Image (cartoon, rainbow, N blue to C red; front, top):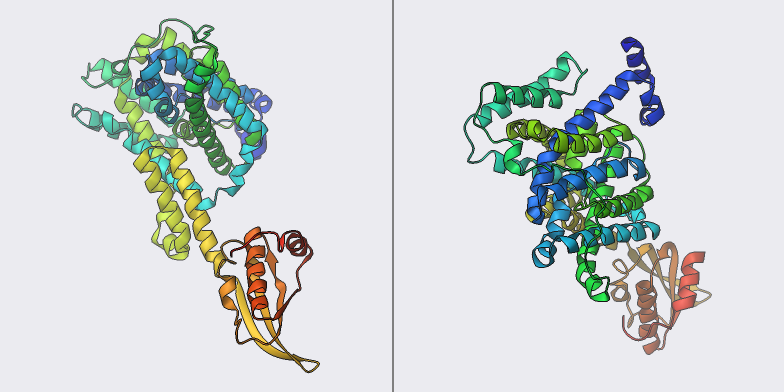
Amino acid sequence: MAHSSTAVAEELTPEERQSVLRTLKTPRLLKTEVLAGLVVALALIPEAIAFSLIAGVDPQYGLFASFTMAVSIAFLGGRPAMISAATAATALVIAPLVASHGVEYLIATVILAGVFQVLLAVIGVAKLMRFIPRSVMVGFVNALAILIFTSQFPDLIGVPWLVYPMVAFGLVVIYLLPRITSAVPAPLVAIVLLTILAVVFALNVPTVGDKGQLPESLPSLFIPDVPFTMETFQIIAPYALGMAAVGLLESLMTAKLVDDVTDTRSGKVRESWGQGAANIITGFFGGMGGCAMVGQTMINVKASGARTRISTFCAGIFILILAVTLGDIVALMPMAALVAVMIFVSIATFDWHSIKPSTLKMMPKSETSVMLVTVIATVWTHNLAIGVALGVLTAMVLFARRVAHLATVERRIEQHFGEEIAKYEVTGELFFASSNDLYTQFNYAEDPDHIVIDMFNSHVWDASTVASLDAVTEKYAKYGKRVEISGLNAASLDLHDRMAGNLGAGH
């Protein structure tokens, strides 16, 4: 039976491998998904506690958020096998609100952020992903790998010396076990072995229990006790909008990354409103909200080989079971085991090909610059949204600067039926960047009385270009000379006819 399951798995295409029904019928694949969910849950618990502390709330708010987010997105999301839970990005956004107004306002903010995300999905914000260049995506991935690695420093600095050999042992298991067998995820084996070592030999090393108290009861319906007034809305709306924007950006970027890793496509619009709905549900169950998590998703997809929604659902269920019913056992897990897993994830996530000398030599400097800006901004601010936004802005500026040099103007003097004509051939794409100095490329005083501007090999894209052509025409008119613009294609002619002469003075 095991051989048959293996054969079936090898025959499946990447798209078929995402089928929940097929996985439920194939024991080997189902085992992979369930164990992957367990590994993710074990790694999520200490992180959820840590993010709760960042936000300034009790650990239960982060743990309940991780449970409800994972279970909800397993059904609602557009990207199978992606993990959503409480995150540092959203915790940082809402921390000031918790400090100033308390937990009740936090929950109201989470619900409102979910509503904003649904609205953003409806207006098509996910379609903006097509405007994120590959160099920004590479920078995003590399920055995340660095942040995942550096986030382990608190558990590696100022700790008992035994932590270091334990982390090393965990990495050895994670890297070597797959060469022997892939029946059980290597990260899970590393966590179990290191926990047994710590308990049996009573090793004095930091444990999950040191991070904070685990909850003792199940989450229940939570209605925030805040006044439903415009004043409340004005207080929470800026934080909710920030949380919605950061959460959507991180989720959509993570979805795109998983698409590349699994060679499949996902529904970005569905993922957008799914994240919103999951945050609304999370808020009503007393969670601090969240979004997709790159580190945990990479554990699920890369380290454990999961591909379906089953792993995401199992991760949520295991978080609840482990945190509430098996909290005393989970608390014994040494942090060294989880540090080893996260270091492995950071190494696996980093795009090492992007920094190879041969790649850097081949890649245009502008592409490398965009990647570096994205990495530096993200790592410096610890904010993925800022890093990606600056990366996209840099890409736009460099692109505009490059394209600006592609428009050329060539002049020659011709004789037509005994009349001397100055003919200018304009070549290239004309928009605000490339047409900005168009005005300066004509010999106004020296040209004859008849000027022809041939636009056959160019395209007019915006009002800036039309204004530049108006300025050229007006300048010649001051010299008493006549300008004829010819060769415009249909789209350019329509834009020019509608706007020429109606843009006011100036260039």
